Image 1 (cartoon, rainbow, N blue to C red):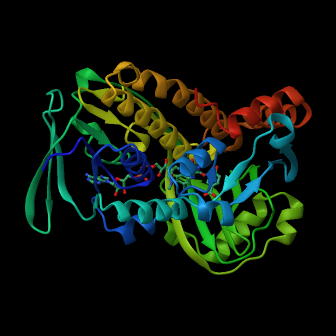
Image 2 (cartoon, rainbow, N blue to C red; image 1 turned 45 degrees about the vertical axis):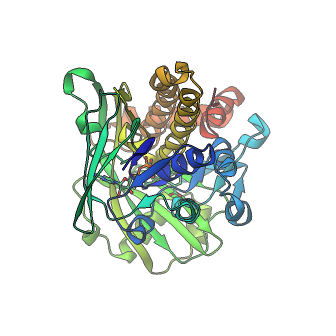
Length: 388
Ligand code: RFL
Ligand code: PHB
């Protein structure tokens, strides 16, 4: 089989890239290891930057997002059980859209399925000859061994995928920070406690109140890294969440049964460069941010934007953008890594944290509460750094 582009991974980044390439008349295929149902069962991100919404619009998959997504003009931050609001609409004239990653991925799946370019349940996916002019990707589907010859292999296969592993250690550099805690996330069919997200710093640890729609809430609390969901009955979770939220929200919290409960570890990770020969990495395959800044999916989408432009340039005999893909994407990635690290460091309780460290966090949040300059800085990062 011959394709111009072989994309490994049918998560949000792989599907968006496939849709944009197809629109540009570039012949591509997506190899996804799991079934569509499995991909759509993963509860993940909830906050889209304006740039991400515009990309989904460009791909022609924003109809439902426009109808069902919620535009948020601000967020609340809380310290010592009292909260203050940052109005990013007023400060930087931008907003974010609350629309679940699951929904965005479902919309993308519907669109690419019409183009017939996704192979689900592809196993033993293996990219080869990556520095040759025509790399290949072999895989097994319905017990048949298959091989694709292509111009480019794109690794959109997430942090645990196979693409990054093909880059020899001597050809890349890894930057990493593993945080000593995780997030316990709960999805519940209850009305959200607040119209806008609340990020809470509390002496027991971080908490986040988010949502999917008027009757579906998404909450997180910081837990020890070695903790397990078995230790967290719904009642224990609600009690601890109530403890950490600002007082007014705690009083208004509506509780119910959880419909999903999981613990995610937190890390910052970047591999450089995001290219090896004709292999290009996109999204979580190349970088991870802790979810505190709501940046992971948005970064994956901005990588897609840069790579789509670069591949189109290549087929119009201009290789400049392709040669600069990694450097261009990494500039924005490091901006988001810095912001996500700052949010994580300011809002979480670290195991070795003493009273001094707690006071510094409180002073940091107080500065943010009182300084318009600090709020401006926060806002331009939270709504998303520009796509150059
Ligand atoms: P994905 O979503 O991991 O998709 C990769 C796909 O590749 C497939 N795959 C393979 N396919 C073939 N062969 C192989 N060998 C393969 N190995 C893997 C997988 O099955 C999968 O379908 O990566 P992608 O597309 O780069 O997307 C990245 C985002 O999913 C991720 O960054 C975000 O979810 C991060 N994130 C958030 N990002 C935001 O922008 N805003 C948020 O509000 C936000 N909240 C979050 C988050 C991530 C979280 N967790 C679970 C870590 C909240 C949480 C709790
Ligand atoms: C979510 O709704 O899942 C969510 C929102 C904001 C974050 C992380 C996750 O920073």
